[in-house]
Amino acid sequence: MIRTPEAPAGRAVPAAAPYRRSLWVRTRALRTGLLFTSPWIVGILCFILYPTGASFYYSLTQYDLLQTPTFIGLDNYAQLLQDETVGIAIYNTLYYMVLWVPLNIALSIAVALLLNLKVRGMSIYRTLFYLPVLVPAVATSLLWVWFLNPQYGVANWLLSLVGLPGLGWLASTTWSKPSIVLISLWGSVGNTMLIFLASLQDIPRDLHDAAEVDGANAWQRFWSITLPLLTPVIFFELIIGIIAGIQFFTIPYVVTGGTGNPANSLTVFGLILYRAAFFNFKMGYASAMAWSATVIIFILTYILFRTSNRWVFYQSGEAR
Image (tube, rainbow, N blue to C red; front, top):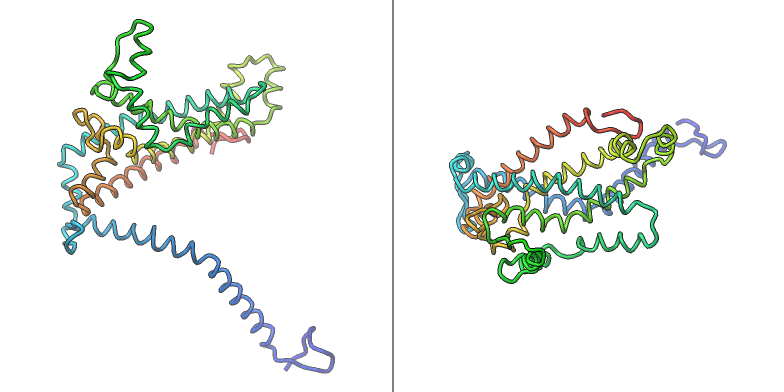
């Protein structure tokens, strides 16, 4: 028995009593924390970890949703390398990414610079540029299908007003992929612009004032101050763009009705994955496609992270 500061004078308590009380308090706090986080934990286990593990297992099996999966090893992955449709889909997906990702970033920066000016009624302009983001992708796709119709669409009518010939747009193998990029930009620039606008407003005004005093014009200030300090956001948007580009599905599906026509020019990777899983019921093969896409995303993201220290700058002025 020892005397503790909390014990009354002349009365001794067991030495283990404070430790037991502290352990009980920590255990109670842990139970309370687990109780409040249990919906999130259950959601992660049921909707992320289990489906991820199950899809990897199914990628090694022959599984059609109706019969028990049969383990076949890496046969699904070997079939991917021999499937001509997969090669076409990868080409179309890369074509889309190479066009859409840089254009989305460039246009978003340009619009953000305009919306960062001190002009009367700027809040109205910002709202108008952001409105397309609020329209569901399916509705946007249907609207653009009508707008780009080669026979009665508004786009060709506008071209005829200035004496230009109409284009095939979504019905042409030449213009179908640029048309899809145009539709995607309509729905994505507003969201990306908002992120760049917030970043622009975070750049210290003192840097621009000092450069202006030194005689730097608007272009020099943009190139030497604004653009370098936007590189962390550009880096973020590149990664998001790569992930979104490889998962690109909704617009080509709605525009083509799931066919990828004309002549498979709009057959992207997400579309053939969907067809393999839910039209042909080759869930094992579709799972192998999904994991192949995951590996591609990981490799491209890893390359970006490894090279980011050469061109990503922060307000400290140093690359990381």
